[in-house]
Image (tube, rainbow, N blue to C red; front, top):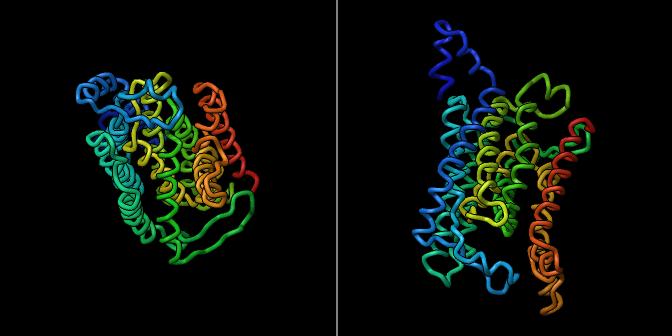
Length: 360
């Protein structure tokens, strides 16, 4: 919005010319979102505490988590609001890709918010039923995917193989159901990972750093040609969106680091996971996201393996508890050590993913 308001005034004040630059607007989108979260975080935490919007804690989980019962949750609302304000202020409002991404963030966030509220209001409730949650997630994903399908041109249905040159699989119209399932899966993967103080927020930050590079180079014809990756018109503007998310997640981590003063809840984790999936669809890095978000894949995979092993062995467990971060907790590792080590893994996965830009 600021770009459209101030850029026409450049003939009167040449300094406004800086709003042309994507790097400038991206940096200040991050600063804006960070400032909003940091400024309003304490009052939001206090308000949630007064409303008794506390996090329910599983009694069958690690005993150290019982002390966290009652910690304010639904902090994801703060992330969503900060990102929305920052993106609207600093984006090119004519770019449809940022609006689609913002719709995904808010859409998945509303589903998570409904789930959080049900858990809070009905203490013995698991929130939305698994079926209802999946259907709502699939609906939001479908709206986003159909919009991208009709906006993206001939290459939208193609899957590009990381580490290989010119290896492409064209799914055609079958890309739509694939993409819906894929985005829904990523929404749930981040949700499952959000079980330790600061874990999900820190890992999302790592992934967003990688995606900021990918959106920037994918949106430039010269860079994308040089790196032999698909050129996506308008994708560069998503860098503003990514940096807004980076700023909001960094600000949130200030309060969410151990010992957490607030949890993001499903409002935050479902929205952040869904957006990662959407970003990968836009820049045609669906398969590369499996590398970027390697820790999320591990976490979701551990749950699936636990369930499968439990059924096949009629009651035996592969891990002490799933997702796998709880297995390490029950094995004696401190929560903070697990979080930092998973962050390190997240950074390594992001670097490996970016290295594919020169390997293909």
